[in-house]
Image 1 (cartoon, rainbow, N blue to C red):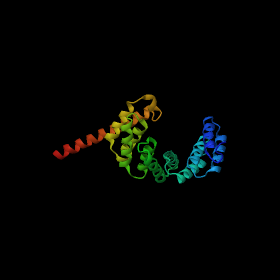
Image 2: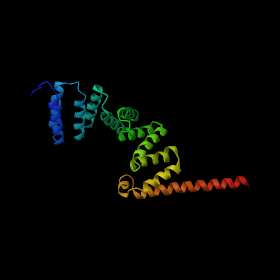
Image 3: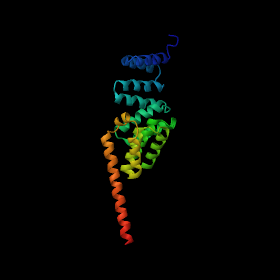
Image 4: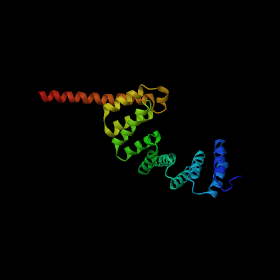
Length: 214
């Protein structure tokens, strides 16, 4: 009432409406705010967040893009767009957005993990593992990242010894949390399979060494 040309009354009222799960009112209030000032990046950013709550992903994406056009210094907008692109398997675009988030939050877990997944798909396995190591150093019980690291070591680097070490560490962790990511029988099977391959390799190497001595 005191500042009729300011968008902030509508903006903060929209936050209250969002908190009360009144998404229609929240969006209407943000529209009113944008009618007063279209240059504020926080308005389309908040609109994108509300649209996410009602699963309107395409329009949410457009709002986040608009927010970044107005102000690049919105790491969460970069992160949301990176996750959209990763879901769409557009790894190059996803990597660009994750790096945008990391410019402002160098240790953002989701941005680092998203970037690691992109790096693998783009052929930079070394950097993917580096990002995974950073995350594990911050939280040694991060099962999702450990599983990712183990999979990369097994499938891309073909370093079965280190992959086996990771899978065994995962097996030793909290069972409830682990089962949400990988079943016990599946993990057991993977460990036994790698152990068998490594055993055969050692036996083959021993036979070759014995044959060369003869």
